[in-house]
Amino acid sequence: MSQQRKIILSESEMPTHWYNIVADMPNKPLPPLHPGTKQPIDAQALAPLFPMELIKQEVSQERWIEIPEEVRNIYSLWRPTPMFRAYGLEKALGTKSRIYYKYEGVTAGSHKPNTAIPQGYYNAREGIKKIATETGAGQWGSALSFACKLFDIACEVFMVKVSYEGKPYRKIMMNTWGATVHSSPSNLTQAGRSILQKDPNSPGSLGIAISEAVEVAATHEDTKYALGSVLNHVLMHQTVIGLEAMKQLEKAGDYPDIVIAPFGGGSNFAGIAFPFLQNNLLGGRQTRAIAVEPTSCPKLTRGVFRYDFGDTIGMTPLIPMYTLGHNFIPSPIHAGGLRYHGAGAIISQLLKDRLMEADAINQIECFEAGILFSRTEGVIPAPEANHAIAEVIRQVKQAQTEGISKTILFNLCGHGNFDLGAYDQYLSGKLVDFEVSQDQIDASIGELDTPVI
Image 1 (cartoon, rainbow, N blue to C red):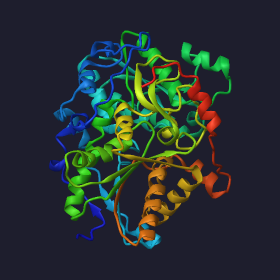
Image 2: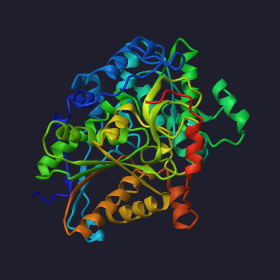
Image 3: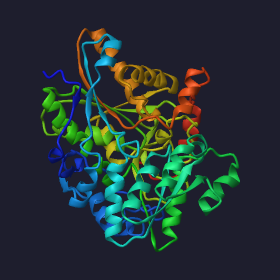
């Protein structure tokens, strides 16, 4: 087995197609429902929000979707991304298990450009001049701002208030690429005003920000909407991560027993895990795939599987998902990208069918893991990525208890260079955990009047 620390691919080895896991799923995701009639919707119903090519990808059951040459050319600015063997972390943990990480923080600071670029491309092909979107911690908003600048499209971003105030440098990144950024909830939309009327001090949530962005797109003919996670086409675009990782591990003479990624809406996890899950589904080598969410927003581990809105106000189609209820407002943890009430339809079906696993970890344990990683590997991870590292450490300790070694791969989805305020809180002993009670979850789910599956 190779002992090299950094495993790289040449530009010619970059994937030429995205992988669509729906083609291989034994149970396909249930259809989305119209928010008003509660009846299954067809592709045309999505046309006010998305360009037609993305709608085709959203409903496709083809296994492989070709990546347009122009998108691949832009990908080559940072792809293929490097994979590293985490020898320093392995030594610190005293383990014989092998730990690899795929580093996606090369451009715009996270994995999000993998879908922002194709979304910008397909909108530009249809002559769209403006895109509205939401962002949690700012990674998606930054990525889409960059993509829109490349394709000469105006970008309007509704950024969750707690991150808008706590992560100003990500707002500056978006402004640098020409985007207009609003704190959400805002007074600019009916959705935002209705939330502020109920709670003037609302910290915001991804669900609220989605409502605001969807409203802008739905009420302006020249504007489309773009989502950074959850939807099928978004998850598919991210599979370039796992497809590259498979080639890199082959070069290293290894294959993962476990693949781990943070979980907000699904793009991070799907990107690294879906290509390995294909082998599972087709009877090849078997890999455990673990999605890791915060204990303060535990939709996969404590939510219910039913139809729910993707946004707080109820403007989006109803999606079959694991959810805490679209009115659930997560605590203001620093991993803003994971503060989402639901999970994508594909992920939810895979979890329901027990083809993947989920775990929930509290904020302090995650930052402890991130500090250890930064001190052994030299990269300060984003708070979202810390969830994956914390799960890696749990799995390593479990393997040690069992007297075995494992090969573990995780997605280091972005750096934490703009999250140093969070690290300062941890280092000064001011970081706190947020616990969500079962009563809170039950109350939020009890408010749902959406179809039960």
